[in-house]
Amino acid sequence: MPESQNCEFEIGKVYSIHLSKLMPNPAQPRKYFDEEEIKALATDIDANGLLQNITFTCHEGKLIIISGERRVRAHKQLGKESIEGKYVDGDLLTLALMENILRSDLTAIEFAESVAALQKQKNCSSNDIAEIIGKKKSTTSEILKIASLPEEIRNDARTKPYMTRERLLKVARRKDADTQRKVYSKLRNMLENQSKIPRKPSNSSQGNTESGNRFVNAHIRKLERMTEELNTSHKKMLAKLKAELSDKEKQELKTVLENMQAAIEVCKQHTSDLGVERLKKEPIIMERLN
Image (cartoon, rainbow, N blue to C red; front, side):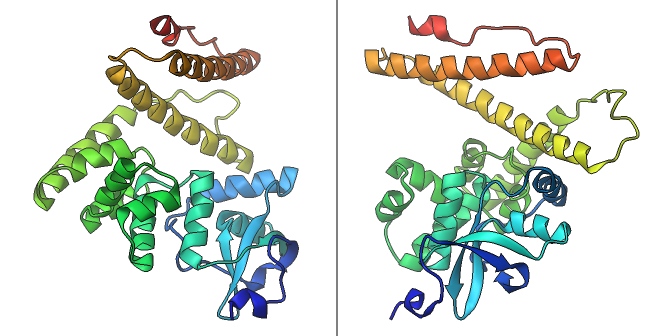
């Protein structure tokens, strides 16, 4: 008999759960939690409330967090006793993996390791896993190749969001572990040196250590990661734009670039409102598509 039939909760229904009853998921793909980001999240929840419920399930008589462990930790920091959560049913690893895939906030290593663990648990082929996670077969093979990197590389990359799948794949394609370690070390040093650009603090932030600044700083780091990923994707796309695109592909690419440009314009307006010099406007690659 499925465990859900012995559970007092109904699938898909939201409950108020006492924090002391919730346990971390032992199969959670995310192994590293940034304490600064949790503090920032706590500040946001304190100001705006919980914007998204957590999900949980019953396993061996315990209530296990499937998604939202950071939200639970933030609630505990705020001294709250309970949190809103939606009940889901299924095996722990599959549930946690699918929840995180939808949110797309795992590092490349965390995602690769969780896919490999899921394949091992289900004892299925790479093609089957590709269907489960909704990825192309070639992409899934790349993900599993990253999961086979030496443990010391995986442990280091786990806490570094800038170690994208494309970068780690270049390391994983090396013929032996020693070469992979050397290539990874060189790549990490290069990226860290590039990031050591001194930032001039604004007058309003000097000497200010309030939690509100931590919230802003956490999102600045997130935007920096997104910018790096966008640059990588942009270069990769340009390198492959050698064949003639179909009319449909041109229109889809134009649409997404126009949406991106609109979002950038909004950011420009905000920087202007904050007294920051407006960003230099540079066209994306629209002219290449005509």
